[in-house]
Length: 177
Image (cartoon, rainbow, N blue to C red; front, side, top):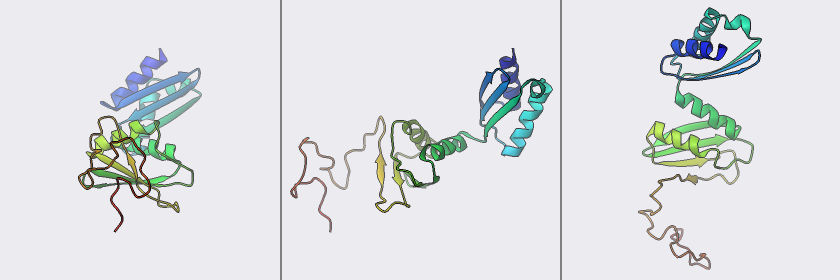
């Protein structure tokens, strides 16, 4: 009964938003992506909707996770997963993400959906991740399903197509100038 009432009230307050409602006895958790409002306004709107149906008096605790847009939510998830501050910039078709973190972070399967979503939001075809706080900072390329740009125009021999390891000056990468 409460689940339907709460979800309906939230959806009426934020039409078109993604709404998630979880109820655990007297605890209510509400997630809204796409409020279209700043946090203070969205919180006020949500409390008004919950008060109207009597949910504020019924539940012992209410947790709200409100995000103005899908982009805001994705950037928050990226910050959470990297345990640091991030900055996002677009250079042509490359989305550059700088991660200012003290933990040893690397791109893994958990991040792939988030990075793919960021690429869609920003219209990028490539992602590079930088770690400015690290001694050996560099660009970490990110590939995804459908990544068909492995053949570099700058070096048609990269990556190796032979399957043999390179070494002893036989690398496929051009020599440094």
